[in-house]
Amino acid sequence: MAERRTVRVVLADDHPVVRDGLRGMLTAVPDVEVVGEVGDGVAAVALVRALRPDVLLLDLRMPRGDGLDAIVALCDDPVRVLVLSTFATARDVRAALEAGATGYVLKDAPRDQLVAAVHAAADGESVLSPAVATQVVTRMRGTPGTDLTEREVAVLRLVAQGTPNRAIAASLFVSEATVKTHLVHVFTKLGVTDRAAAVAAAYERGILPA
Image 1 (cartoon, rainbow, N blue to C red):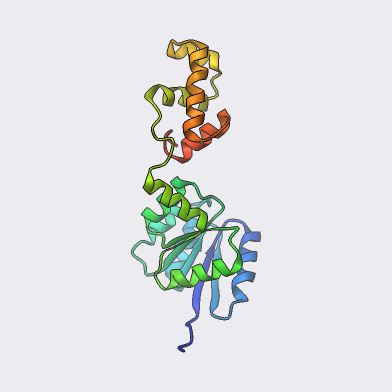
Image 2 (tube, rainbow, N blue to C red):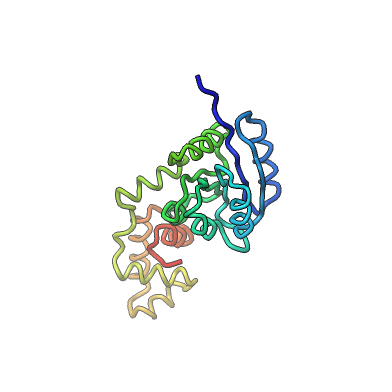
């Protein structure tokens, strides 16, 4: 059996503790070498171009040029970008993959899963954490909650602005009872039980603009 080649990796995360943990995890693997690490998107692009690693393990939310900016900037480079994020929102996953990321893995992934993802990315294979894959499949099948009526979206938009029911009713020229009915329908369609969760789900699914 042919010996597996060593995968050269650059780490990009603005939290030093996270980078320390990743470095320790990956350097324990014989065929993975961490060749550099940075704490922001601009530095990530510069280091990748200087070191030419096989894989850039990249957080999305960083200062001075976030992860998405880095993915776009490196789209013509041979490096494979593997996003490693705390978040698996449909918006983040879609944006990263459309920008050119090879894969998307969550930070709570077990070590074996992360190492396998690094190798797969180096080989040019697309790789997604199970939770991320679920997001993608759900979106392909049609995300629940996108069938809100225009009035329900209007109510939800005002809820997102922190507007109480009485003020929403006055703004839309309906009764407060009608507003409550709209909210019940919104909660049901989004699969949530309260106002805060409804707003979060609406932003995540693109019902409300970011």
